[in-house]
Length: 257
Ligand SMILES: Nc1ncnc2c1ncn2[C@@H]1O[C@H](COP(=O)(O)OP(=O)(O)O)[C@@H](O)[C@H]1O
Ligand SMILES: [Mg+2]
Image 1 (cartoon, rainbow, N blue to C red):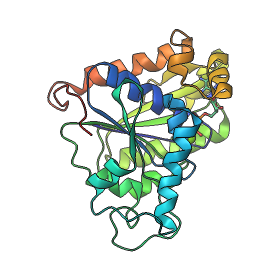
Image 2 (image 1 turned 120 degrees about the vertical axis):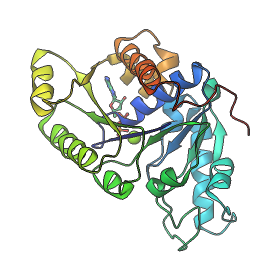
Image 3 (image 1 turned 45 degrees about the vertical axis):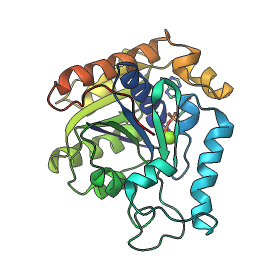
């Protein structure tokens, strides 16, 4: 099962991706979290800490400077640029590097292509994409099972989200799930439902516990598991697993190194 998390910068993609990935892994599924952002910080939200997250990014950068050999396959890319995160999530940083070699599986393909190429019948993959609509376009019709569009209840964020949702529908990319993050009041709810009249958005409240976890550089799931925003996101993860049905889910197993 492949889950793509998209939306405007700062809407909450990384927060959403981290809670989804760890909750899914806790249910026993082999889970791969892909950090596809050129500013990769999913590791911090997963609870790996700043040091390990920076080391992963440095390893990815080392390929660019020629200090480390390019991996031969996308599977090797995930293995080499990956690390084990809490709850057994495997995290790999697969953002595009600055000086790509055409045709190279680690840098000649975009993270979106990589997601398409990954043969993941036995995995749940959660991809935290770069901000904006470019990622949805670069997915270029390669389907995912679920496209989570994260929006804040602001005019700009809703506009990006609405266009992303249109693209996802037009290209039949996968099941569309709109997640309205940082919702404060009924007016916010009204703004979101007006922007997405055809879907019933998942509502995630504006929650100081998320900001506090961010300041401390820890995972929201560890710092405040019972906070309203984390609860909303763990419920979403459970719903995604439940509605995926047995057929599209792998058998639970540990993700081998
Ligand atoms: N529900 C929430 N309540 C409060 N703050 C939040 C919430 N979700 C995200 N944030 C904060 O918003 C900022 C952006 O979130 P992040 O997940 O990094 O977004 P993105 O990956 O889309 O850029 C972070 O500082 C994060 O702590
Ligand atoms: Mg992010």
